[in-house]
Length: 493
Image 1 (cartoon, rainbow, N blue to C red):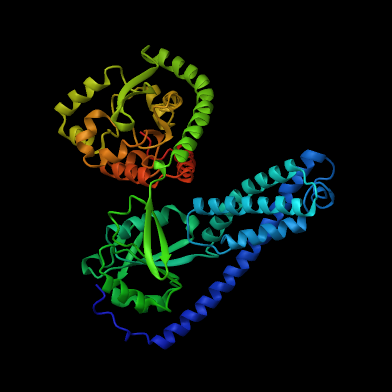
Image 2 (cartoon, rainbow, N blue to C red):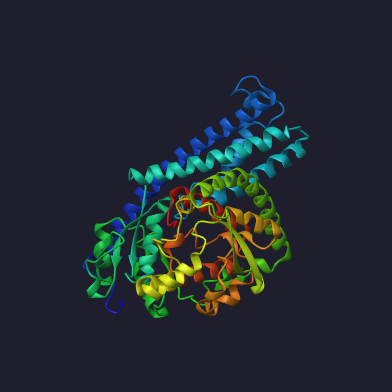
């Protein structure tokens, strides 16, 4: 690929670069305008948040408390500190990243602002109400999550500000990248289409996006469409090919990204570092740290207690439904693989008929299609063994709620790999050793990445990824994604 790409294209370099420069200037002006609007909205949210907090604490006027009360920091000072903190955390740059990254930066910037305000209070020997300061920032952070999510969505929906991206490579990696972009409009990516040197793929449509031509057509496409970024989705491309593509695109697009062939590293917690001009990739496994394991356990205990409080009325409801349907047991215990290969018995609301295992083996013997589907996915999409109350529980993703008991006992975690069956060990192959290093979870990477729509091999890869990339922040993101997936009822069966 790219062997026939030279600097002498249909469009002369000088005229093309002039056109690109004009586009960049226009794009920067638009970015600055929408960033300024966002800044004004942030100031409004900040004023509203501290006004609410000061009103709760001191009563009186809703707005003027933020300006006149001697027990809270000056609103003008607070605005300057927050504005600088947000700016240096890239919160006005409209970066093409996911909502979770924006959320993380908001938390970092807000925490830093809180520390600075406390330091200023100490330095000036001024007393600030801790209630107003902390509650005000908590309210502000919550407002910011909502504001920034819908602000970007609004800009994207009405095509006011988008980042046009062209994907080079219409293979498997290109398909995966386009799926991710399509699912996350918060990135503000707008896919122009694909380029690929395989002539059989020309004019094909992949995830609603067309293969526009071969790589040698890139200058023509850049000239006719406002391409801001190019993603090179060819993991197996040689160093020479990548260098040639990047050199050719320099000065013609704002940013170039590529997916390197890091199959052996991709499942590790990787971080790119600059070692005096030499790029290095560092890897680490967070769950090897005892402090991290302790933090995760504390969160598990708190989450399990909250879950069990919710579990009590839900169990009463399920008991009534089960009693009316088949009078069988409410709960179902099943032997699964725990941490370090230890046997555990997970608790679930019974969603199938009592003799479900025997019926499954009989069905597999009688119907080759059912056998193939189960051996591939370890699940059946239209499983006749599911009861009426079981269908409701599965559709609402409530059938696994009793596993909060397993979490409290220390056998499971809120977030972790899927608790696998012993008969699945041969199919797990080399993944088995990695996955059993940690406790299985009620939810995990595979549940929020398509849930039951993913096949067995894909689940293994996602679980391995989780084990080797674990962080407290990743757990938080997975829990938030789980709530969204449950509300969407996506892939639940």
